[in-house]
Length: 276
Image 1 (cartoon, rainbow, N blue to C red):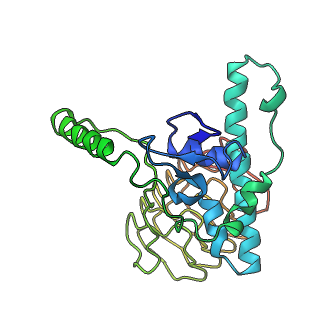
Image 2: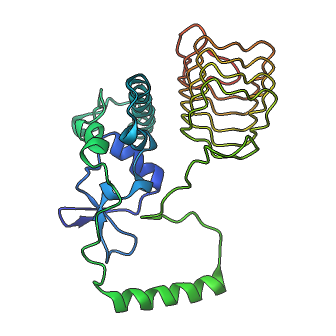
Image 3: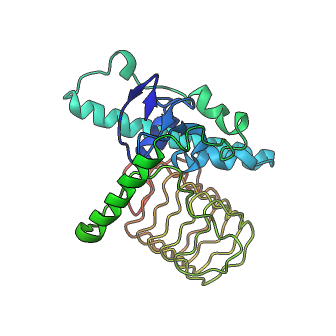
């Protein structure tokens, strides 16, 4: 990360996205993997919060309002984690100065997808800067990787995340993140281990559906039929379950942090298996 000539990092993708939500990284900040080729943070989709990217093309006012609520919820979650870590470091002291918690999403963050609708169209202005050095370094890295390969989670810049597979049939580990499945008939389907974050399942028939270990963060289950559904180990954080039916549904180990329960109340952070 580079700002005004000062380089910091590296940072994991999730940390960068959280800092964007909290306004700690500005759209004008630059990122690079090799410190030779830099590009504006706002042009790298993999480093921007998914909640912002969903707002980019949404035109339906009702769903757009729902997505904005999800963005605020994600901001609260990122803010709470940061505040919790800071309190541990300060042994219970109150945050001061620039570390004081923010109460709303940064205006720059809220405006980002609307001010920059073509995030991936900025050409690199320094593509050929240090080309010989970069190629030599890459050749050395490949050689070392073949000899000393170890599984790692590297900090990647400019890598486009896996695209949702909204047209694919229901199956384990399918990627339906952000897909519109309103009023879908998925009775008895197996969606175990699937990425269903921020998907819209309002008024859908999901009775007997298997969601074991599925990612359901921010999913919309308004008035959905979840009777006999298997939600064991699923992540339902920030999901909306208002009006949903859950007769005989299994929620063993399910994460319900900040989820909106059937009766409209918000589940407490750390809720597991039931809304507290």
